[in-house]
Image 1 (cartoon, one colour):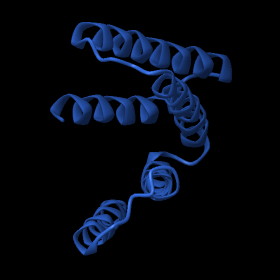
Image 2: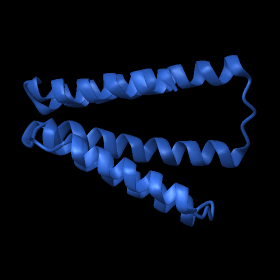
Image 3: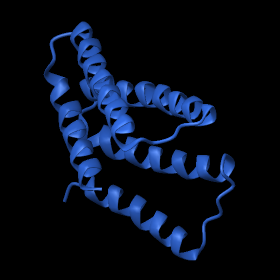
Image 4: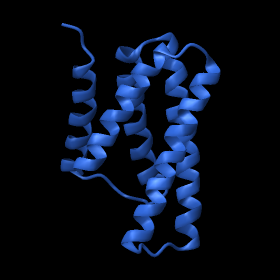
Length: 133
């Protein structure tokens, strides 16, 4: 959990910093380096922990990875024009909703009262963090 939190913080900081890149070619190189590095680390982790992957797991992982490249890669260009104070909260809330929708449609997971309360608290927390007081 700590590793996931730290890597997400580094990614968010990098996305905001990418606003200073001089052109789109540099942004393509930046996104490519980030995702190739993440792929290598994921492959090494999978091999070291001896996770058994089925064909469906690999297909789903590739689909999730492709969605991540599109969504996270688009954030680099969005922060170029809008800035991190707008892009990061909006995309965080959007991703939260999409993950919840996917869990309901793909895995048929139902959300109980506590799950709904946590979901609302998470969305409200992200939105409150983005308020400028």
